[in-house]
Amino acid sequence: MKHSLPWTICLVLTSLLGSGVTVANDDSHDSHDKYQRPNLPLRPAHTYSIVARDAATGQLGAAVQSHWFSVGADVIWAQPGVGAVATQSFIEVSYGPLGLAMMEQGNSAEQTLQALLAKDEHQNVRQIGMIDANGNNAVHTGALAINAHCDIVGEDFTVQANLMEKASVCQAMASAFLSSKEDLAGRMMAALQAAQAEGGDIRGKQSAAMLVVEGDKGTPVWKGRVVDLRVEDNVEPISELSRLLHVARTYRKMTEGDDLMTIGKIDEALAAYSAAEAMMPDNHEAIFWHAATLAAVDRVDESLPLFKKAFALHPLWRDLVPRLPASNLLPDDAALISKILAVK
Image 1 (spheres, rainbow, N blue to C red):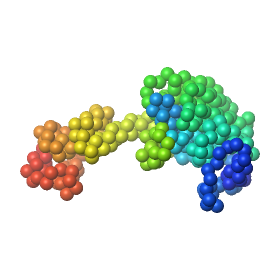
Image 2: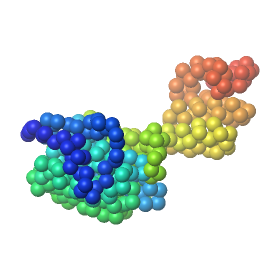
Image 3: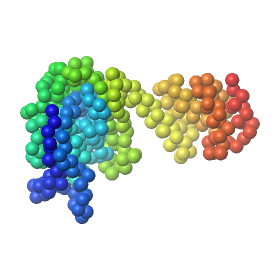
């Protein structure tokens, strides 16, 4: 099911000028060339997805599952303090980056979506969900989207699906999202799990992805990604995504410990390392760095049982210990290094 799609994004932007929709001013002649996708094939990314906002934290996110390889690469988009987009069905990828660019200029999700649809000659096969940083949201399901399809707009979220076994997928997603008491990532995960429990994609399961960004506009991308996970090809992509989310939270807690150590908040750092260790008791990385931190602040006796456990789980940590003083991660103290390495 392939067709030529001659939709040029620069033409879209030109047409939007004077329409009441704000487009960024830029003196460079090719500022939007990266959005041009001439002769883009009309290709399927049939799926179910959610875009959402956490009103308390301002976080924005999107999550998706499909029987299609690497669905997250094209379908879900988010930018700190700006918004989130899911673009699917017979997909036009540029709804993602161009939608974010327009919302960044102050257009609401509804204004952005309607402006883009108006210039899309194939809008009848698109399915898009958008949400902006103010919680305004919008959804579109084209008349030619493959059944079963559905969409729901709710407070701080939209869910949308096509090529499902049952149209009740969207209601299941909405109910799960609204009833969950977790953070934004956890609530979106609940929505994906509910969709699959309701039957999900009629073709089956293959890939899944989740993206969550901070709510502060202008936050650099490298600081603003709270969750950025993809399962590209897996027989149980949602289960694997859920596992990865837990791992990501563990490592985020470890990073919190590192950041606290950097500013000298030792006790808080050790608490963060302990929390990470509790989240994944057999993760020898968390155990080792917890031990190394204790040893570095002269709490050696507390560190030794942790070193013992780390060495048992991954013997090569023992080889790393003598290298750490050169990087100022342990004191340059031969007696201390010997005491750690003597642990059996």
